[in-house]
Length: 96
Image (cartoon, rainbow, N blue to C red; front, side):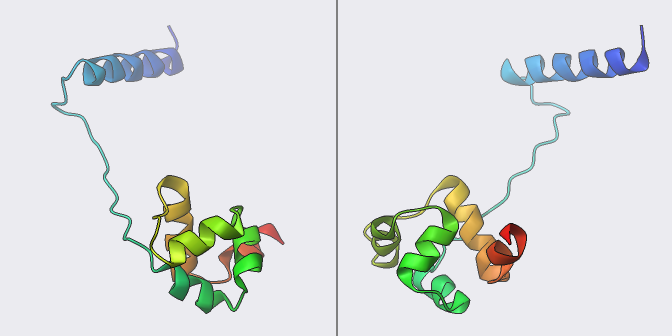
C-alpha cells in the first residue's frame, strides 16, 4: 500500500478511537473566542449599522439585537467579529 493510503487509514483509525471515547494521545485544540463588544467593533469600522450588517452578512435587526445585548453572536459570527475587532478593515480588504 502507498504511504498516502496508510496515512489516511491511520488517521481514520484515530478518529474512530476518539469518537469511541479513547482520547489518550489525541491532540485537540480549544480556542477561546471572547464575547465581542459589537457596538465598539462596528464603531471601529466607521460603518453605519446597515452597512456593517450588510458587510458581515446579517440583517440590521440582528446587529441591533447584538448591540443592545438582547442576543449574542454565536459560532462563525462571533469569530468574524473577533477578527474585525483585531483588524477593522479585514472584511473590506478580503472581499474587495
